[in-house]
Structure formats: structure tokens, C-alpha cells
Image: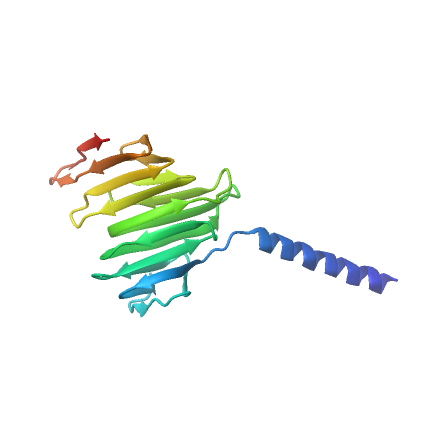
Length: 196
């Protein structure tokens, strides 16, 4: 009898673990579209490798598109991130569980144009895209962030709302926001303008 109870207990633990695992969001993004030369690499490695259709990236990867190249990453089967030609991003966090139990996603745009359609997040989950000048957070939103070689960052919100920091504010779509960077030896100036 004890043997059956032990076996039943083990089975219950295995089923519970499987249910919890199935409910956790996928911590990988899948390349669902590639056109041209697209490469990826783990941040700690030096060599880039060709990104292939249906290949995956996770936290700690860089992704780069070259001239006349594009890529699309599908996250959690509901959100999309598209990279335009000449774009480099760091996948800093991809559905990583925070101390509070939320799932955090963070992309850092080094240069180029990234478009995101974000949905399927929990009420306290975060989806953040940053550049050297500003950061954006959103939920149920379609928007684009462009970072030029000089650091000028342009944000376009197509639907939904984006929270913007540095400077801190909320942008409701449709709308357009641009920051430019002027650097001197003593300080960083961030002139901004809003065009609707």
C-alpha cells in the first residue's frame, strides 16, 4: 500500500510540474521571417552565426541585419518584433521571471529600426525596448523605435500607448516622438520635440 501511495505521490508531483512548465511563457524567440543576411551570436562569444528560419534566440543574444536584410522574431506566439535593414539589437531579457514573479522582456537597440506588436502579456509583465537615450515600455501596443548612428532616437506609436522615460512621459498612438543627442565634454543635452 505504501508503495502505491509513494508512486501516486510521485505521479502527482510530475503532473504538477508539467502543468507549471506548460503555463510558463516560452523564454525563446523564433525567427519566423528572414530576408537577406541575418546573423546572431551569444553576447559572450565573438563569432556571428547565420540565423536560419525557425532558429531561436534567448536572453544574452545579439541579432544583426545587414543591408537589404530583414528579420522577424515571434515571441510567446502573440508578440512580434521586426528588424529593418542595418539593425543590431541585444536580447537582454526574454520572459525572465523577476523577483516579484513577473515576466520581463528587454531589448536594447544599438542601431537601426525595430518594430514591435506586443500582446499576450500578463497584467504585471513588462516589455521594454531601450536605446542609449531613452526607454519604452508598453502593453497591447504596436510601435517602432529607430536609433540612428549618432544616437538620435525616433519613436512612432501606431496603436495603444507607450510609456517613455528619459524624458519620462506617456505617448498615445498614433503619434511621433524624436530625441536627438548633442554631446559636450561636460554634460549630455537631450532636446526633444513632439510631432503629431
